[in-house]
Length: 147
Image 1: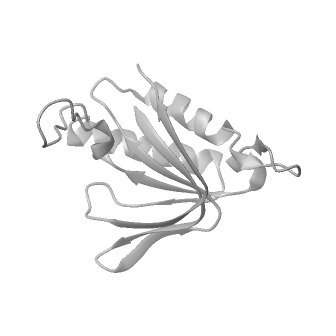
Image 2 (image 1 turned 60 degrees about the horizontal axis):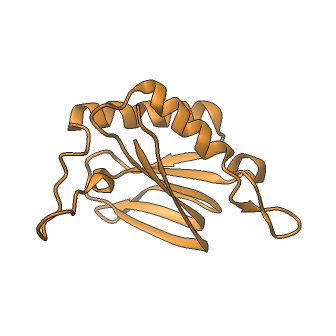
């Protein structure tokens, strides 16, 4: 399972010109399931994301989590995080979970996030989306968890 976290001052997802999800300050989370991923891995990934201390405390140190600062989560499925670029010039995506598994795990991620965090918005699995963000810092953190 792969996630790319971007600390943002604001972010939104549009589909066909319509905003389907938007947050103020918080985390934009690009999420990619891989073939061997499980619901247990979803739980571990979410716990890590919610507790990761990448927001400033009163002294300007990265010491607070998204939960501690009351930030939003914008969750977007993105199978391209599993791109294999080792050979040739066209990336391969066999490292991403098949669509049915990817969608099931993304949906589980969203359900669990909404149960654990008060502000959760999403894109739409499999849709052509435009993601707009203002990266705060800039802070961008890749996370990878293996089964």
